[in-house]
Image (tube, rainbow, N blue to C red; front, side, top):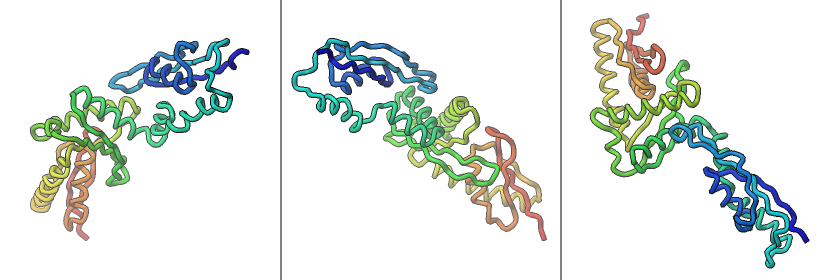
Length: 256
């Protein structure tokens, strides 16, 4: 009696992993399978724009069933592993559907860290915009030990990493995405410095009556300036220009 033919497609990062995954799922040795490679897959640039490998596996006609298996056991062998542990493509698809921008930001930063041989955890989340003209910002936290090398002198390394990441994310996503990267709470310390700067520049505006234009800043730093001066009695702030050269202007409030 011939073995009932089973044909199924499997997706994984590489062809070898897809075949191995399929063999385990079908409960049969790899040498008993006919393999058709549908897509070799691609790593893409910095791991972006990558494609998973895809194969179609068929159990060869004429192969005998394993003696210990019966139809019920065979079905359980096929179905149970899928229920307990979804294949990588299913998991990845769910994550991407939740929010492609956060997933993209995490992938970009993680890949750059790998290129730098830095082992760290990466988590992305949204931060609400400060005004209606600003986009909500993506904040990427880098967590780990001994990551001071990522900050550099006057945060030059961190700003460079943030800038490069922003460019890659914008290119892959198709539009500019405000992005902030933080390492071990460094941005909190930077935030205190920006608050001092905001108050000092506000005083100059009050004393001179002339507006002050700050240097171009990423969205996260502009946000600090806005929040620090939003309840100021004599001055107000607004963001001007286009990303990535958008900056904060501090001006006198109109007196009633």
